[in-house]
Image (tube, rainbow, N blue to C red; front, side, top):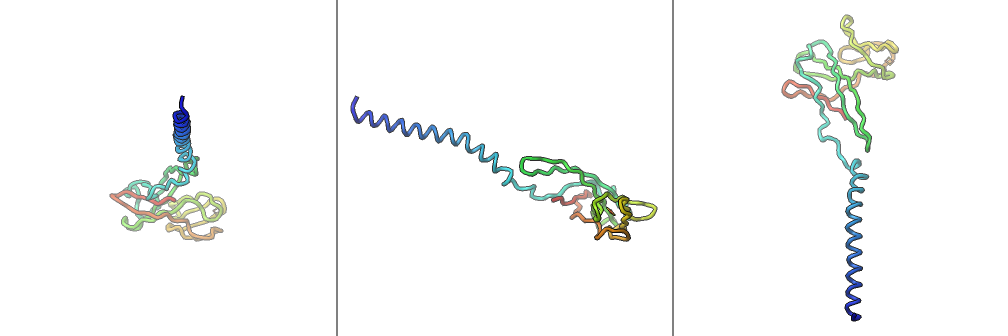
Length: 159
Ligand code: FES
């Protein structure tokens, strides 16, 4: 065998080794990188709007409770969370969405129809139908959600 043919075979084997090694690295490495970095780069749904129910369910003058389940992703962990929202309207055109979580120590408030107010049983916090504090220790009104209506459906923004 000539010296020249030996050299060329060596070059070929060296190049083939590098090529095969590169292909194996790409086959294993690219999916691994996507798996590791993917959740970090993944953007949340661009809108964040969640449909909670029809406007027809809300009687003007009476806060109406809606309940929705949302999934939150933190890295590789997905949690399901229940969100409860009181929707209120005076006129059937303008709506407000309020959290049912008390702004004092996060107990759940409930609407008391006879008294026309929200009541928090933990420390007797009281809110009016718009969520403003009337009595007790809550430091601020009930939190609001951004709300929109489309085709007689109510959507809130959860983020
Ligand atoms: S948690 Fe509601 S008044 Fe304290």
